[in-house]
Length: 117
Image (tube, rainbow, N blue to C red; front, side, top):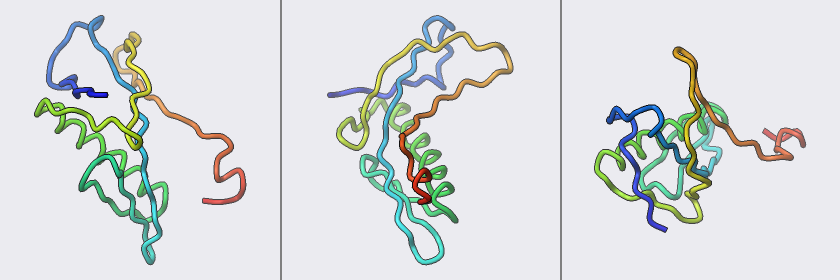
């Protein structure tokens, strides 16, 4: 599948024309002495460190956002495959001025259910 990242942040589309894609991106987190190393196999060169698993995942998410913004700025395709999957394309709902729109995914049962962090 070939999907090109769109320049959603750089253009000023009409509110009804805004589309959003939702991606599922694999992040691998490994312990590295007193810290954690995280990387996204789909995005070459995307490696971050964090003080905790959550910190490493958060930094990987931030780095993935910058990576995808760069793909969009250059009109490059998203690396859709086993480690970066397009979940769906959706119309962004109307959001009141000053409000934020966020999405998240849950995996259940989670590792914390079993006392693993």
